[in-house]
Image (cartoon, rainbow over all chains, first blue to last red; front, side, top):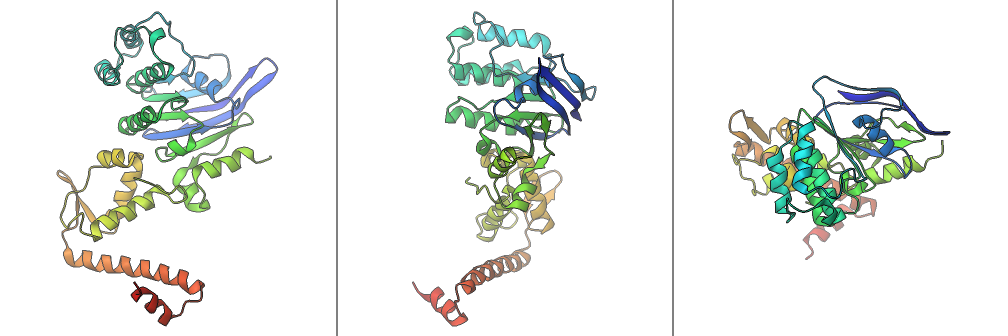
Length: 224
Length: 115
């Protein structure tokens, strides 16, 4: 079980997260949807442990470790792809390095290339592979599909499907709801600094007859 | 596979599987795709396939062999009865829609026989 209790975060006077409380079981792919500026990235940074300045609690069971795919580039551009993969292995001991190397070469990315010489899409894909094959039981993906071509997006979707299992859980933020709705179990809407209740996709579609995207639009635009 | 987004994916997969079974594309006793393989094929969450298979198993259209995997039931008599039940249900739905357009029984039969 992975979750948060009363997570609060402010940037100066601006309160970004007012009260985020949730709990997610393993073997689930869960979406976090929200408009730009809703605080999705802020929340993921807190959940990943990158940002320690917040109020509230992030809780996880002992065996759970967290990997995080950030939007921004956190690695030095003069690092090689291989160097980056080896560097990540030092703090992700369960990382499947062989699998990452195989997938990278399948995409025509050379291990000796410098990160600065990769296209932004390729860099994003490398980050995705490092997260999903990190061996971490909790993987946080911030906008994994944005700015990628159709083939790359399909590849990411397929990898998420094949890598989810009883010991892991994936949290994905995205604006590409149509593309993700068939692979997520459920989702939260992040709005006004708090989480909506957990919406299970099947239940929503079954009960409202609306698609996940239609339902989300209604929720995110509703006046309180 | 193409899915409609205003129907649950589970129900669409169940229907797809039923069509495969009732049309004989998946013959009686035939092995069906493992959950993960089928999930990859449909590009959906494996949990969704698990639920669809559980529903089909509940209806006794498929069964699980603990070592060999999942199979279409070999019971041909049962399959025939379930197929008929399914087809009747579909015809009933179709008829209800046409009735809403004021189609009588005679007209309904006439329409079906038209080319």
